Image 1 (cartoon, rainbow, N blue to C red):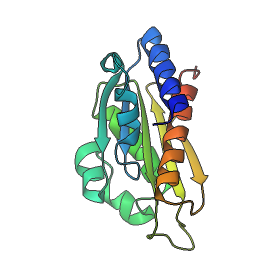
Image 2: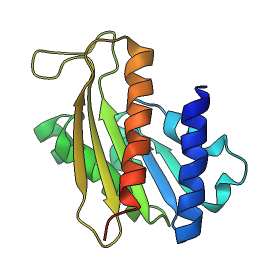
Image 3: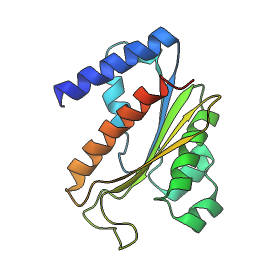
Length: 164
């Protein structure tokens, strides 16, 4: 693992601990990589409340309450679903802040409208409006898309510290 990324994760956990905030993740295309990075840090259990790997549409619906109608209307890789994933992770946990991630890591599965490398993020924090981030990393290869998404998830968790 990238040592700089691990240090960022450690610093993030310390900042959350100081504020008394808990984290949850709802991951699709990253398959739990964000939660894995965070929980690699000793003592992370004081901050990481839980992680949901919701790779299938059914998992999004059953585990975190994303509406099947919402997925049918917009597709799993969309702004509304990313927002709903983050909000669902909050609703189905004891966390204060959650990030939802859904995208197309490749090498296949893309289309003209939703190309490989497209990733949508939702950031939900109790008491604040949910934030959306869209990234189009390009067809960099599966590992690079997923790694880039992990970095952006950390950025969002950092951003959440400064809301309000």
